[in-house]
Image (cartoon, rainbow, N blue to C red; front, side, top):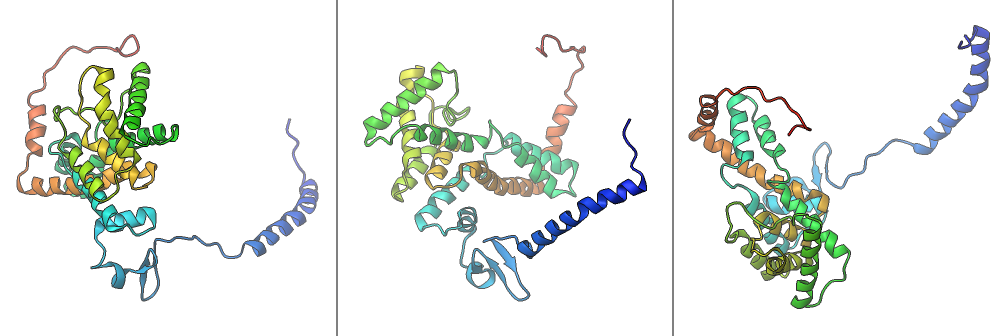
Length: 298
């Protein structure tokens, strides 16, 4: 049984423990001082708002474009004009691709809850995963992992050799290469050569893009067929070459898609299709007998 402390015992325990604890707490309080939360981002005072060390009203508004600001916020350094051009080309490439699942779910959510535009946008963004939008991050990370394990080649032949080794390793391990293949643009994604060209024009054609291009050249030797390098993949390579955090590459894809989803909602207001999509499914479903799961759900 647990011993029940009498009032006297409780008092004796308090006398033994409290003085040391109180002194320790007092010492910590004197040493720590007021708690602070450092940030180089936004801060406000009575008459001013600062952002990244700049006066928001005087130095940023009307002077800094949104793409430049997004890059600046993520890196806390002001990008060069070339970096802005490549970064904004990526945002444009990923903004909208028509009636993708992310666009459809945004429209359907707005149909269900027109009082919650933020819910409709969030629903679309939550669909950014391994099949849509997430490939940007997956490809950037994949290329960075390969580059982190090998010295950088010095010429195209060296890049092709590294790419060939990489594709063969993926084939042996039965792993897919992020950014290789497209369900629509089977003969070539038009975004890919354009982004390669913009990066080259701005002197930002770095190792991630070089490796990705080499994979595009050599993979038929291993796979026995030619697959296109898709736009989401080349965007990941370009963002990685800009030095942006790999952990945030998907976030930039979502930033771009937010603009596209706003466009989807704006068009839904003028030319609604969400109700037709809903009714197409609702009025054309058919009842079938229950199919209980078995053998692990197969």
